[in-house]
Amino acid sequence: MEIPNINKRIRQIIDYYANGVVKKFAENIEMQQQTLNRLFVIDKRTGKYPIATTDILQKISEMYDCVDVNWLLTGQGKMLRNNQKIENITGNANNNLNIGRDNNAGINITSQHVEDFIRITEKNQEQTDRMLSIIEKMVNK
Image (tube, rainbow, N blue to C red; front, side):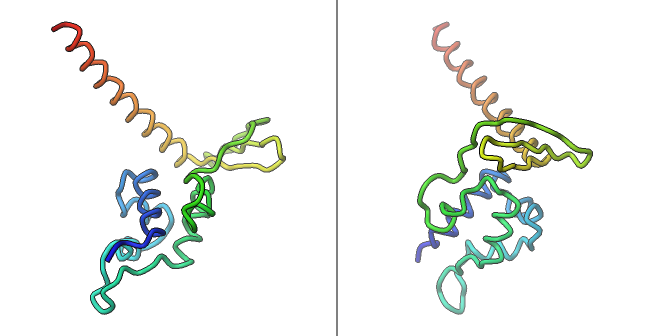
């Protein structure tokens, strides 16, 4: 029995936002870790994987509003919505950054988003450094 596609997409989100750490992701969306863990383990009574509940999907979409809900539900499109042209940026004392877009809709960037961006940037830098090291070794042979 194969894991349902929607659960696989949730796993992709966990990998992207929490480096695959279910506990961290569960804390981010204010759910119990075991609730998410169950999505990836066959139910002994039914012999099937459980399917994500609407509560889980709602919490993911509320916490990670850049995740495309259509992709989450159907698998069509891309995981992350495309950002539109930025017109203005303001911040506040709650570590939130409000960005107005050209269609007058706003998005809210929290300190968690910034931490995720920093983590991704650091990971990219590590990969770049490794690649440069390999290239340097090849050139010096």
